[in-house]
Length: 240
Image 1 (cartoon, rainbow, N blue to C red):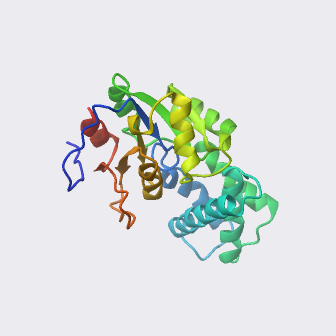
Image 2: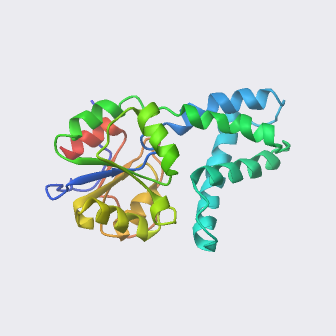
């Protein structure tokens, strides 16, 4: 049986009409999908860093690239561009030449992302009660490919931050999503494995469901999640 990881009173979601899901790291298993590709590429170069450590550096640096992209306001670069910039930085940090062929080799794994194993069965349970919507930092064409070919789920809507020109947790992302769905912010729940995403959504009036698969600490902020669970099976139990 799935365990609901929460120390607070169970929230009441009776007014909720839509669940907006983060895609990268919440529905899609980034580390599990990408580390085999990273491992093979590192072995080809006799690099002195493990695939797990390289991935941790890459993911961390990508978030910095996203924050910089939004703050500097020189024009929205797009998700895959921040992934590429982060890769370029981490390759050089580990003494690997960031030549175009190497960058292409490491990037190819992003076409093979797969969902966590329990996600689809949980979505099937929740679809009878809620609109199920992807709200992602991803580029529109990339999201279309991932949702159609890799997740293979017919969401009620797929919303990219490209429409507002900033990455989450910019407040315009959440407010615009609620508006596109024709809902009040309080009628939406942001479901994410990224604590900054929940914090940003809660600050805008969304409810928040934190999928904390790895028992990570949450932000030091008043904007706490309404519920914290360890996977999508527990999420469905908490919301139904």
